[in-house]
Length: 499
Length: 136
Image (cartoon, rainbow over all chains, first blue to last red; front, side, top):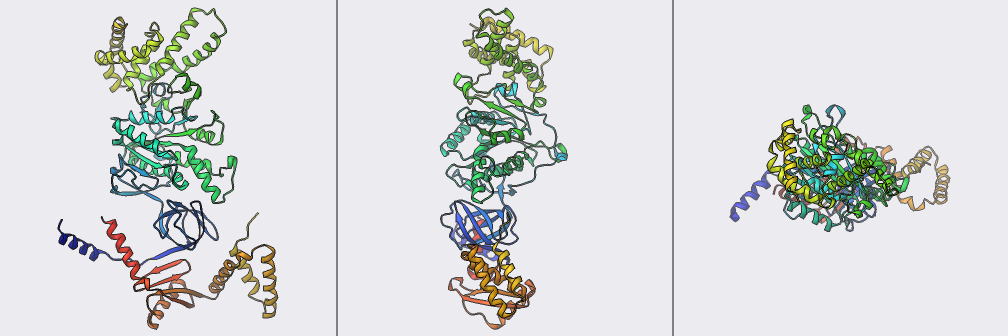
């Protein structure tokens, strides 16, 4: 582009520009502490309205008092001084959204932080919005296939559901979420991963993992790092859900992961205490339940009349020493439609994912489970529960009858089958074949240490030789008699050659 | 327990003092000072006084306007501004507090309560900068 052309363009832009005269509402900084500013003036300001500081930093009005306004500051507050002018923008906090946000990493206010340049936004979505009403909703009946056998078989999740992932530190909570994202490839699902108060190194690793798995094409990462202001951690999940709503409004299905809401509650507690709101249980403010309920209520499945689309939420909560009766875990358990409970003991026993099947539950997901999976996994949860009971009982007695022995052996194989490597989601047809082989007793005579090998080879063999069965499960979500006969034959043939 | 805001105190001072004679007022203000001291509110006194000032101005239909410009404005301009502000704020009297600021480059800036009407050249350039960078 020539210099003349640039100058011409600039002239044209300047000619087009007309500065509108408008009355601006301003205030003055009275006090400033730890990311919170008390500002005088700013009459008529709305709650959650954006304000700007002289150095360009943004803030949001949170406390509207008689004499002053409590403002949370996003970003560096060290340059703000007492007496600085604060301008109200008249806009409720919103986040820029567009289709080109896919594959990007943005901060809690939607600014890209991945060094790939600006995102051309087509729209802005308010981060605080009232959840869709009952008239616009539809019950959950479409599955979210996570690719994790124990979840898809025993704790199925449906599109529009809110399923909590709960457990102690280092039990594989994030791993489940990443596996679920990786498995959405080709399943017409947009994923939003909201990282709240996590280490930047962890986020970088996660991003690299998603990129390697080709999952960033349909994923957006919203990050509020551990080193950033608590205000950013507070708004990050709302930004995430606003981005998810943008895609849902286009009739798309979205999976959103909040990693994690314990840190979100801690950030909100910090802000609330600094704003001098009265502390309640565990020093959390009184509205900490509403903080999460209004966020998770925005996950829903819309009916066709309202454009379809859904938001499935996987909030993550970290417990301390397995205590699910703490304040935040009990709150989020009561809000969600079920929970996947991960246990440290199981994790160290080598049962990974370390899902405690007894404590985990999906309240609405079973109606979304495909028929074929329902058929093979229908009694799995009960069988596993009986196995755990018998296992405990068998430790005391030596003489066991044949039926009990059989049940114990079957249980051991079921536990082995449900183990799964990280970042290795399994497609639903293969899951059905494996569980079919397990529940029909085809694995009863396979040594426990050979189960994984058996499963892997069976899946490869069946994929090539039981085409009718695979096609039926993929398309009709259930097999016919013909398909079942084919699968039975294929398993028997495979077993003859399996050593 | 409800807290007493500075605004509440200023309003109470105004309502209690407005119908009092000069002699009564002298005694009254002494008592106010004692009250502020007893309640450890003397540090808040400047804020209370500025609020009291606002309340009195409002009650009298008087508006204090901060007018900043690069150079002194002409009487006609000020008259025109006063007429516009009288209409906008339904005020009877406009009191200008003028100040000169070279950094404004030109034009003027009006500040009334917590509202600002910025008609300075500096502001126009800033807005042009915003416009040009946003259209990139």
